[in-house]
Amino acid sequence: MAKRERVMRMSVEQPLWRALTAYRVLTMFYAVGLFATAYDHFTRPWVAVTYFAVLFVWTLATLPRVAGAVHCTKPFLAVDLTVALTGILLTRVADAGSRIDGGGPTLPSIWTAGAVLAFAIKGGWRWAAFASTLVAAANLVERGAPTRDTVHNVILVWVASIAIGYVVEVARASERTLARALEIEAATRERERLARDIHDGVLQVLAMVQRRGSTLGGEAAELGRMAGEQEVALRTLVSGGMVPLSRVSEDAALGALVRAVDEPDDEDDPVGPVDLRSLLAPYATARVTFSEPGAPVSLTPAAARELAAAVGAALDNVRRHVGADARAWILVEDEPDEVVVTVRDDGPGIPEGRLAQAEGEGRLGVALSIRGRLRDLGGTAELVSVPGQGTEVELKVPKVSRGRASTR
Image 1: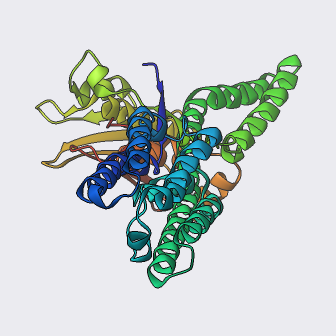
Image 2: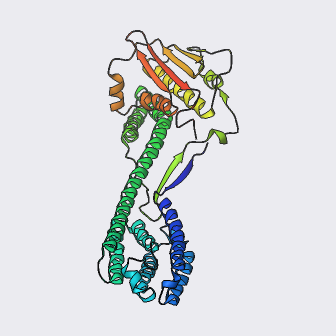
Image 3: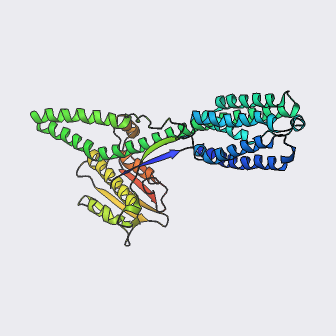
């Protein structure tokens, strides 16, 4: 079954843009409401009416601009901040001096904070500091002198915007780190899958060519020697291959982009649950005894395929290390919560430390073809070997999928 590349876009700041869009609309109506309640106190109300008409049209027309970082460009931010600063400076022209001196609100009121927050979300704390400083200067000019309320509001906007800008920068860094981790995990999973397939096919063929070539001699011996060299090189590549460089997008406007290869979905498989016995039965020979329950052992297609492949890898190890005449037994047990498959042989057993040595040499039959498959299924693979009494491999797979290879 073909695998599919899944593209994921992660953006922790997108909810902030949506919140900013709502904030701008609400604060625009709030500013208009403040003006309407104090209309009679304005000395030049027509100036305020003209400004609020512009503010109303500008706020609604630019909603798509502040819906995301892509369209919220530097020129737009500059114009947006200019609209806010103009409203602050026009307050002294439109409103009465007594109201201004008494701490009355500016024309845009708290709508101004939205323009500053757009700078913070788009460019981080440095952009926020720049925008909030210009707003602070405009407020001081509008008031004529630094009053207690003015200084308090200026510091509040300055600190809040810088804090939000810093949080956005930290969130972006965390987002890129998470995306990189997901990318490495996906690449490692794909490399392990390829390593299992290579071990089950190519490496075994090369090992067989090497052995037969050494036995036949002549030109076949040279061919066997070359096959042995390629086997060693391929094992080294499989066991120590580098994880590909991350393809995580560095575009903060779009968010982190991760591409991962999905395992085939069981839901896409035209066949439903399969009987594990039908996949294990072909392994039964004159030297391999297969014992099965009387009822079907149902597993998802992916889990059944991987479990059968792990059993095949265990039998390959028996033939390779014990000999073609070795006897082996396959026992299938259908438990209420899991399926247990045991592969046992009558060989001399595995010397202590041999598995670790083989893994260090790049021989990953047990590590990848058996344990790796069971780990991806959410199961376990336990190997028990007593010198002189053979080797037993116990494979356990849960019926309720907990692994990656048997779930979407």
